[in-house]
Image (cartoon, rainbow, N blue to C red; front, side):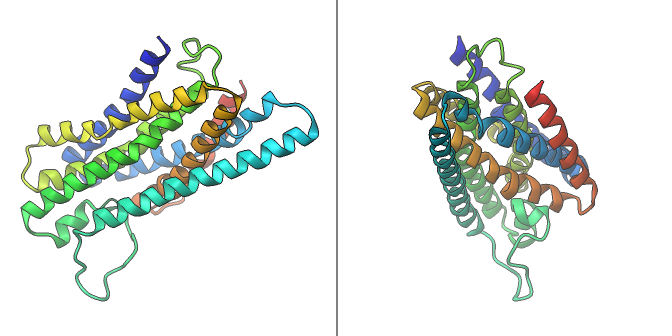
Length: 286
């Protein structure tokens, strides 16, 4: 029953979240940037509170004594760093893979993302790749890259639920559910990044949205794996939660916040982040 609940939650987080992004990319396009920007900043704030006030301190609850706690703090910090670096490395590989299709116009062209379209490579493809077949291939590459990227994100959800003594009772109230919601929001611009080049390359909108949603399926696989590993014992739970924390810290600072700022260059995303941090703090401790 626990695994079925995990599968259902992560199906909505991964498949439905990415599918919604694909739908937005197919219909609304840039008109939705400001709304999505605020959602991403808010989600990043909530997740920052959950990671720092819940996931990273959870292993400390199982140990007593000053020396033991110091050792656990150091081990947790090392695992968090490892999780951050692994997800960072994976994203570097994804960026190099998806960027291969993009010819720059001239030496004046920015080499780093200067707006959301650069970051998610959506309209960037349309601007520089006029061949529809190349656009279509670019969309498929992005779809596969995001599918791979969703696997460790699913592990974060599963590891968060692994610390719950009664998963069913806390399925909609624990930190795992908050993380699932945040990842669903995070998947919106990723879904946009997949559907736009697919549709621009000639694919019908409904088919593009369907394939975009499918790229979220690895989230379910990752969640089952994370929940399984987290339930093997205290050391395994420490490793799972530490990796999950590091992965989510990268998602927050390496993706959610940059995407939000590039979508809407305003002070309001910072306010949404602040509100998210405060709300996350309240939700963790009530």
